[in-house]
Amino acid sequence: MSATWTNYGGNITATPHAIVEPKSLDDLRKIVEKARAEGRTVRGVGDGHSFSSVAVTDGYLVRTQSYGLPLPLMPLRPDVNSSNLVHVEAGMTIRTCIDTLRKMIPPKGLHNMGSYTGQALIGAISTGTHGSGWKLGPLANAVRSVTMVAGDGKAYRIEPTNGISDPGGVPDDITLIQEDTVFDGVVIAMGSLGLVYSLVLDVRDDYALVERRQVSTWNTVRPILHTGHDMFTKFRHQEVLINPYETDGHHTAVITSRRERIPSDDLDVQANRENPWQVIANLLPWHAMNVIATLMKSDASTIPGFLDSGLRTLKGMFGSRYDAVLSLGIDAVDGYASEVAVPFESTADAVDIIIDEAKTYRSEAPNESVAWRYYLTSPFSLRFVAPSSQMMAPQYDRLTTMIEIPCVSFPGTGVTVESVRLLNRIHRRLINDVGARLHWGLEFDALTAQDISTMYPRYNEWLAIRERFDPDRVFENRWSSRVLFGGSGSVISGG
Ligand SMILES: Cc1cc2nc3c(=O)[nH]c(=O)nc-3n(C[C@H](O)[C@H](O)[C@H](O)COP(=O)(O)OP(=O)(O)OC[C@H]3O[C@@H](n4cnc5c(N)ncnc54)[C@H](O)[C@@H]3O)c2cc1C
Image (cartoon, rainbow, N blue to C red; front, top):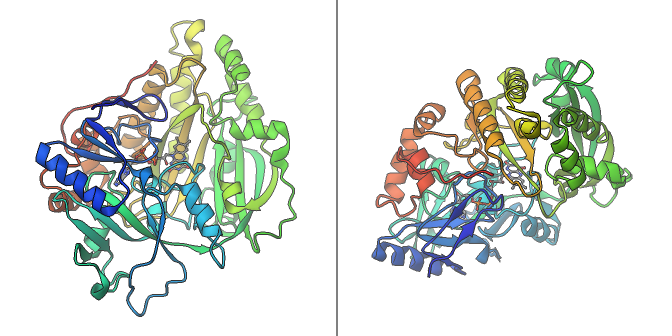
């Protein structure tokens, strides 16, 4: 009955007892009851887009994408305005959610999104997935209500104090909990508190964005990294890409800023991204063109120059619907990334640490033929994210710069041991020197239980919530047992 499961990046495999495809809340209850009766564990799995082992399981692997339909809104308190609320099954992908919202009358949209749309909503939300915009929180900040099956096999609807649901309108087989302290623990819970069935999301009217990308240098960007600067006050979204290596005496950077435009069908900005070089450059952080990969491999000293060329071709303007502007627009990804959450005010120090580690590490290559393995093979990016009240959010309680460090996946090689070692070295320095937290889905098993207790000031409160919803450890996996609860169990492999 057991089957092999591999994550999207191919660096994690597991042999679950069984892979199940539930269709309803009742199916989820039955899976938990069955697992309990057999003494097995259960794990919800989205699209497997995490590079950490957050989603592995030896027990029942629940394919969340088997339930992803829109649902009617439940009865709401009389004072709640429902015009921007939608109720959806939690396995709906971000792509389907965007398309579903756009078909509404009037058309609706997400407040923000990351650079990819293939993830299941709950898969993305529960790891703290985010986009960029210093007034925009992670996706989890849009959640108003969560319906999930806990370790006792019962269904709970969990909302903030004075939440949206009318207590009188909740079905008998769902227990309503409206408490801030519980809600702030369950939305970002990395699959460790229960199987989430549905979500109510706060959305907005559909919109369009105009994006402007300017080539600059890290030395020019450094002094503008404060919230009073025009880049932060005048634009809805801001992002910075940086070449980790020096070329011509500086580190090339690209500043991206985006303004909102309404209505979404009235766009006059040409899509510069249609230029083929621009497309290549846009994809460079994720997409390894074989030819570039081959050149980088044969002479690693060309890597900084390639990164520079890629960055320079990004210059220009692009206007379209928000999802076309914010997403990379690709279906497949030949790359992997780690992501670090640093306090906004420590951004410059964090960038200097990454540059320093990248420089030191490449000098440690034992010989020319393997030198490429000792390089970062993509520019890294700074994305700015508003604080979240979710107690296990990487962005908890602070304006955060999320620093994404992607690597190209060289053909036939996949995730390399050397690159993971470099990423983990960077993680460790950023944790120690600037109080970084790590993205739950993009941390390459660098985290330890000791890190968590110092990174998350409300960790003990969260453990108490876990005791309430999963006292028998039905949702535990090797990752949570090591990272969240102090046991052992890395499953990361590298080529
Ligand atoms: C190409 C690519 C682009 C990315 N872009 C971004 C980005 O722009 N911003 C960003 O922040 N991150 C980004 N990421 C990271 C990604 O968003 C996260 O790793 C996300 O968690 C993956 O979602 P998934 O649906 O694949 O979930 P999985 O990786 O399968 O699972 C993630 C977590 O969700 C839990 N889960 C799944 N289903 C349920 C359920 N029903 N109930 C409870 N818990 C459940 C799992 O147990 C696990 O802990 C990107 C990753 C890739 C590969």
